[in-house]
Length: 52
Image: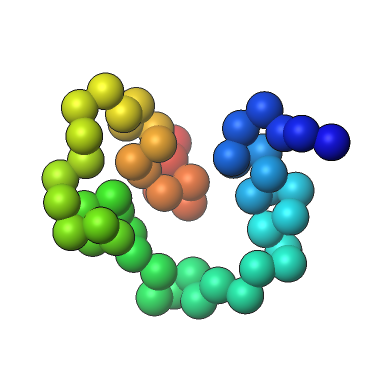
C-alpha cells in the first residue's frame, strides 16, 4: 500500500524507528545547517509536538 504523504507513513510505521526524540534536531535549519527554502509550509517546519 502507498501512503499519500510522508507524515502518514511515519504516523503508521514511526513506532518501528529507534529515534532519540529528545535530542533530535528541532528545526530544518538545525537539521541541514541551512535556512529552510522558500515555499515550505510553516506547518512542515514546526515539530508536531509544538503545533497548536
